[in-house]
Image (cartoon, rainbow, N blue to C red; front, side, top):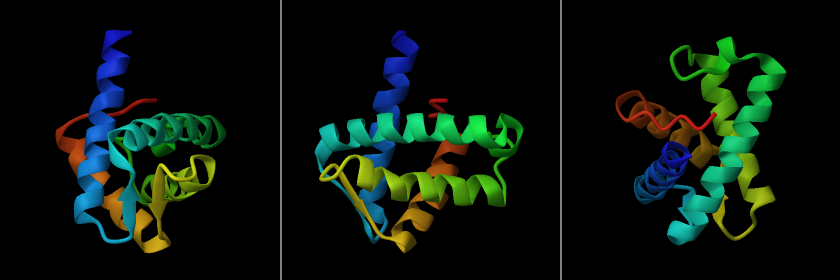
Length: 110
């Protein structure tokens, strides 16, 4: 349980820091980042169930995983209005940056 809480906090921090560097991505403070991290984790889990974990996991993330992560980040703004705002280009860049950070600091929530 403590490990899950730490992962959400790390994911929220990564999302918040990413929003400072990626144009088209804005997160409304740490609380917004934490809420967005929870929603992204839930949506990511649903997508993995639909497509299969072997196609979308962090270790096997290719084009499908990259696009899926961008779509999940983009859809989060409609589920949690006010917590995160992102353009399509911002979602693609955020997916790239988060994927790079995730390869060094595992923040996998699924």
